[in-house]
Figure 1: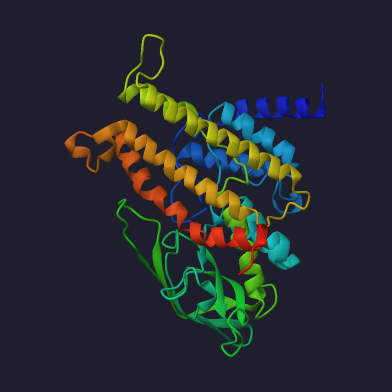
Figure 2 (figure 1 turned 30 degrees about the vertical axis):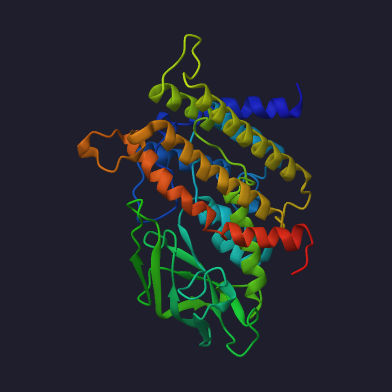
Length: 394
């Protein structure tokens, strides 16, 4: 038996013994927020996986990770998918600020923050966009002024995902207003539970929304939570965006409860019916689903190959390709599911007879249109690909 086979057998056995029934299939996933109560099995699943370091399986063990190789992590995710196990922990802590601190953080920052991220003790949010600084992020105006052992922050951020339930924020602020546009920006960490931070939810057409406006009125960030050099935060901030786009684009792997390809087929058979051979009754819909599932599979294998070929483990400009294509696949999948359901995929209220799955399909149809905007819009990604990947002139 090869080492890979031995590891797979070990993982399979451990998951069978330790993944609670309530952590399989659709359901709650821990974000780390101290403001959200976890159900019993979700909390137990997080605790057990964190103890193994498998909430962040490829992170170094000294920072709370599992120390696994990428191939071992893939085995872990495969076996989790085989038993329909949900991810034990998701959010910006594990996918964005954690990897950034591994690359740019001081040893003190790594020791203070990374193990707590790995254990799911805090939820993080991102302080980037402002009312007049969205795609042109370098136009940000939120200020941080040196006040001895800490910085004092004043300004506003918008579209702050998860701000209402987050415990910490990573933020880009202007620390030198006289420097050129992309200079004079610093990258900091600050707690959300302080008098100088106020959040205001933004309601979207899909109903509930994770987005907030966030206001800073003499908020405090400690000096030891300045990441990278003062006035050199643009470099750190850009790297974090690459980690974000890797996650949105599917480059970071991870376990998924259920098979989206099979789920789409089941939906079609439920709403359209089956022919005498057990196939989806409508051949046009059948071919459309086949094409969608082939694109998903090709994307998944291409992302896996890109990860294996990336010896440094650090995302580059090619993440924009995966973000652009991955976001489009998510949006198109939600569109197709709604189309298959017909008018049942346009439900908005339980009281008029729509099922929970139908209401969810409507919410996904509306929400997943944002994947082509957040993390850098499709237009921004196309520009990056043109300049940084294809080498085209400005």
